[in-house]
Image 1 (tube, rainbow, N blue to C red):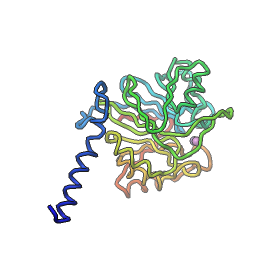
Image 2: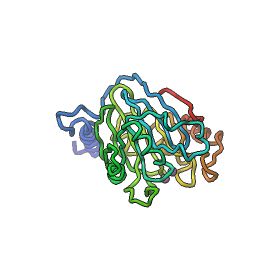
Image 3: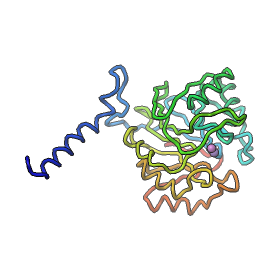
Image 4: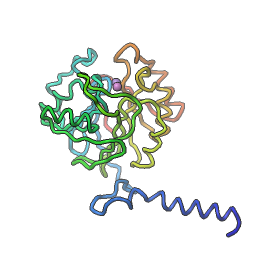
Length: 271
Ligand code: NI
Ligand code: MN
């Protein structure tokens, strides 16, 4: 045992045993484990793209709308905001190109807004149901777990109100799978925490447009950091500074063995 090789092997075994089951054992006993060891794959996530960073995702029997920016987006003129259904509206941060239709969609559906504490409080003040979170925190909603994770960006609401710190969402349940909606962010080392603290991602929605967020080269590295094979791109082509070469973007991911989907407006995919 005095041999350094044995000591190293022992330490590796010891810390592996501590580190691996940490997510399971530190939870209060009245909550289910957050990381099912063998999750059944019955993926049933239906995704609709509304342009820019706006998505509607059917998950856990509920309809989630992310970062709705539709009525001010000329490219999304074919979408009638009045017809958009939502049980929840998730807002990554306060910028207008992510919250423009949040109030309208939440009010017409009686939906709950999920965002950081400051944005949730802001919409709560408008009479909308809201649930505030902050970085690193997770909460079990009736459709599954939501973890609000770090994003490197800025955040202010269109009327100048303080909008807290920007974030992304990792969302999962035992039957539908797990995905990451990054919001607006640069490539950041914190993304490496996602596979350490959340179930295996089935797909992720990452910004790829550059200028205001990471571009597709950095996003392809992000796909490696989060250990995810299938990426849906967002935050591209809406404005001149975020116009991208689609083939070059897909190649950047393909060279890393990843798949990049760039959806057309109103296109639906199932995961
Ligand atoms: Ni932004
Ligand atoms: Mn943005």
